[in-house]
Length: 204
Image (cartoon, rainbow, N blue to C red; front, side):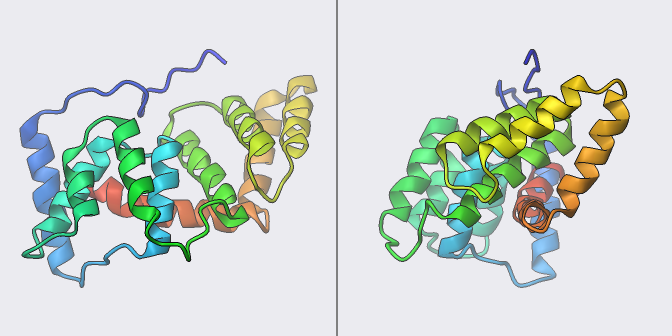
């Protein structure tokens, strides 16, 4: 283990000017297109992004602010995402709103794979290395509904730990993982869902 979660783990304050610049860029960018309001399914994805720590209030606040700026009366769930800062509060807020949408299956296999896709995005962002990602994916797969059983991930880890050419094998495993018929689409979906939040925070 021994990896620091430099992306999300400990919340740090940002200069207000930087946040304001990113927010203005996002609003201007949205003005060129019809804003995409989250569907019921999208809100499930937002929940998984929060649970996996791919996003936190530093992403949800400017994203929600930009959407709020386009309407006269924003829905309560959007106000929650704009105003709450603690990760547990954000998760609870989204879960609360999802209880009204009984047609959304929050425990589906697709959402389980999506969660692991979010972990991959964190690895890609530099939050942790490949070994740590595989361990996290294996641990999540042990207690959740996913396509690939947790033993599949532990086999990947074992091969990596026994290899004399760890870096080369790691790169090969990463490429195969991204090209996998199940995880490839899950990774792409995680990137698609994460993109608006990344733009909202960083402006690009």
